[in-house]
Amino acid sequence: MEESKERFLDKIIKELCSEMNIKLEELSYGWVLQLSKNGKVRHITRNHFDNNPQASSEIADDKYATYEVLKSQNVPVIKHTMIFNPATRSRYVPEEGIWSMIENEFIKYGALVVKPNNECEGQGVELCRNQKELEIAIGKLFQTHANISICPYYNVKKEYRTFYLNGEVFLIYAKTKPFVIGDGKSTLEERIKSLNLPKRKVVEDNLKKLDMTYVPQKNQKVEISWKHNLSGGSIPIVLEKDEIYQKIEQLAIQAGQAMNMNFATIDIIQTMEDEFYVLEVNSGVCATIFSESIADGYEKMKNIYREALKKLF
Image 1: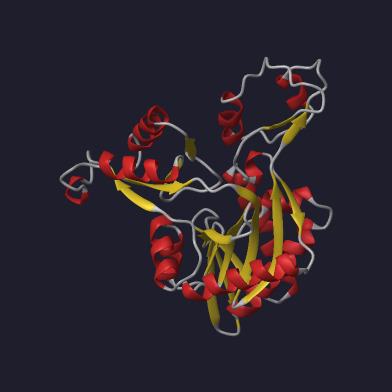
Image 2: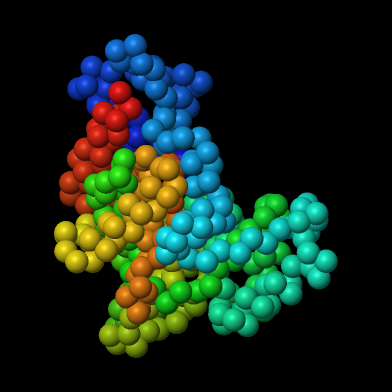
């Protein structure tokens, strides 16, 4: 999966360097792209560009830190609560333990989302509607993580991804969750096969939660997952510049400036009550699946990367 992403970005960067008269060298077995022009040297590692300050990138890679920074500057953001692993971070665990805090959050919100504090593409993210699910999800994450985040479950109407560069938003797309419509005859497994979902672990994990032998009623809509990740099969729809676009654009700019980011993707949710919140800020900018999902996706992303390279030099 990661190799495919790097090939996508490498191809675009090589084309742009050729077009923009930038010298390109591949270092450290291709992990580092070194770009040189007019006496300036810049670097790209994986999907991280030299545009951003290091501290800003590190904050963006930490979901709880992102929440704290945005909240401190009154940017509407989904609430995150840090939970430390008692086995490895005991000095940060309160005397009453972690479960008192977790139970208070659960009582307050009724459902919680448990997630790794520093993963992407929805990996390890679980929606928990009872204490048993919470115990299982947290116990599983604590096997590999020193700290995790828990969030209230928001009733999301739409999730959006914005491409932010130096105080401007260059592109916004909505994510439509994958679903099937029942015919009253076919099993869920048979209906899902027609979707041609990506062959990714996140998809496998989502499907494990479904009863694949279930036969949906005619015209019944069944969503594959509550998550909106493209890696899980969601479909991107590029937004026109309407009133919704402007609201999302304004919030993304507010978040980008608060974080001192120069180049990032910023994910924003719209609730059923039409309130908008920042979900997360991503310091790495890659859009392999997006570019493959719409007719002009490759050119749209190439244009964004072109502008990012202009800012670098």
